Length: 500
Image 1 (cartoon, rainbow, N blue to C red):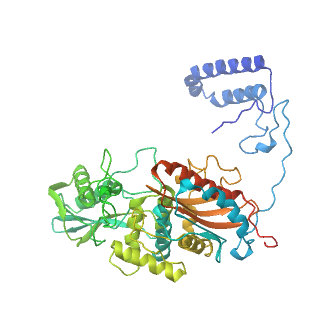
Image 2 (tube, one colour):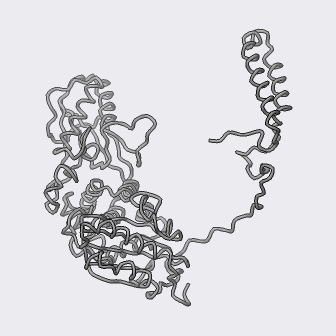
């Protein structure tokens, strides 16, 4: 923070300022040397008054404008002229879906065809661009592999089916001499608290804190020795999706479980641990021992029944969605998919989650995916049409201002500014940077982009751009081509004549 500069509004010659500064330093040294005696002789207040008066004569009085409190009142330095301040116009009223100008199909086609018609992008190209409601103004191609744009679908279903503000609770329960850690499906549960001076986004809790709270309660009850168990049975079915390549095991994605720390990553190094729940229990047991409770034996699976001892809770579901969209977090999305399965009457498996997603889309009037096997888009067997992605986005932008699904919009990365788009759109037209927000999707040979844009003439739109047959040598080019196509939507004049 810049401190107040008393010279700013009353410039002086450099030598005069230098002399004043020198005398002020000398005066302060003398004042400090005499400080103890002045205090004993009750001379502090008179001395301070004389110092303040001298400082005011040399450096200027306190009645001068304070640049921190009233910057507009501070005159510019000599020789610099600034335009007069003008009051900004009123903020426009929020734009309702029915108030927007209609998209011109011809203008949209012209904006996209040159950028998406190149042979290097492969033979499978699918596009849909629509207004905030209604049919697409321009569409091309069918269902393709969506990659991580699938996260838009999962996020909508999670926000629609899970109670707003829901947090996921990790607790400990005591039965006899066994203390059991019960996983509640917190996707961001950490191994230890944030280091001093750092703050995770969203705010997260950790299993070390849970151990400390548990130890405090146990010692208060006179319990000084326990066996540790862990219960990760909230989710059912296989922990590793059978529709994912085997090469992902231990490297790309962790087994999905209701209890883990650091999303199944090891404390050091790379990859994923083979049994995230067991690893989390081991971390808990060590932290419990460090907090003064003796742990007998090694942690083992056990039913989480008994009297609750302590608990920690995750960030609310909307903050989790915001984060997973910003950074395209695969593990967090797969955990949310399991919660969707539970919220829609299933048992928390991959199959239950997908079924819950599809039912939610149908209820909202969004075309269902042709094939869907996961929540994150890691499966190359998923097939989703651009119309489905556009339908998801229309369901969000067309919702009421207080509808929980609106949180999805805040999670969309902004072109050239945030999340997975921070380092993209570097050669986009300036008019498009900041006017495009979108979720990325990338697998080998696959590139997709789906989000929102506002044209230069003020027409809001939603779009989905998809490729899934890109040669390895052209993957970087394809990604940049999608950026340029989305930027073209933000930079075009796409309003249909006579509308708006």
